[in-house]
Length: 434
Image (cartoon, rainbow, N blue to C red; front, top):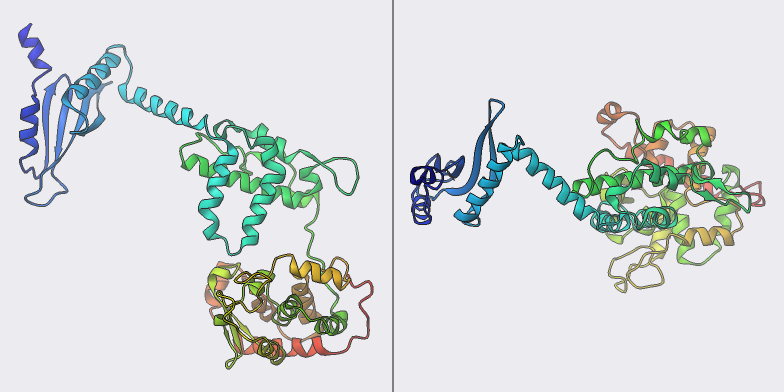
């Protein structure tokens, strides 16, 4: 009996401590018996460094050697390691694979944690940790708005690990009322919004999986999943473009706009003259503008395409800026500051201004379409030049790789002609503009 007992309890605490204090230049295993080993690893250390130590249980299963980690030494004491090894031997004696059982227990621990975390909690964590990636606050606000309006009421309190395809479809097919008509499923009533919502739910569930709060496929994935249950957005309704002002009415529009005295009016005028996006204009800083060179350089982090964009400033655009004096009152150095110090104009500023101008459904972004139509329909400038002026990605990745220049000089001529066109009196008034 004494001999059998010694076969599984060979090591002593004192012997282990002495062994770990000796330099080891490779792998060394101290056998306690019954498959329990203390692995001393000196492979990564330099000469004179002590090895790291950890407990492992080694066994054979179906003719193949297996090794299961039991934890580091000295965090795991000898007695605890022997207990863990004994439990593993018992499982093996019952015909079970100790490693498979350990993996199953890990999955169950993940599931227990996930059962306490809701979709809304995970979404909030994702938004907080990823806002730095977005180019403007409007993008983050859109994420929050769609989730709060359509997702949270139905799956916000659902355990994130339990959300399945049926739950996602319930969100995308929920009834909404459009202009006092009978309720219509969200996917049919507002397909673009619903499509973005689906993508955002998919992203949040992917994030939950990375955080070990979900296991398995993503129920909000489109390909091979929701694509089989929902019609494509293009089949439901064509893409609705931003309402644009006809180019023939630009003269009257600019005359009306220049007669208005407000920061939002000057910002919109500048946006039209530069064919820039709303976010690029309201976030513009004096440090980005070189009036002597006649250029506005928008940094990559504020551009939709994520790359720096040089905007040639026409004479009217430079004159507009010269009338706006930079001030130290605004710490951010904003060209078009909002009513609160250090804060830019609201994203709603242009919308409210256009409503006062009574331009119907015309949007600030729609003036970019007006510019694009003017180039293609009334000028001889090439299409590629207009696309560069609008900071659009030209062609596929291969074509873009070869088109390294930004055609600045040509675009300078284009924007000068656009400014002249905008200053011409219109033969048509602004009534029924859109």
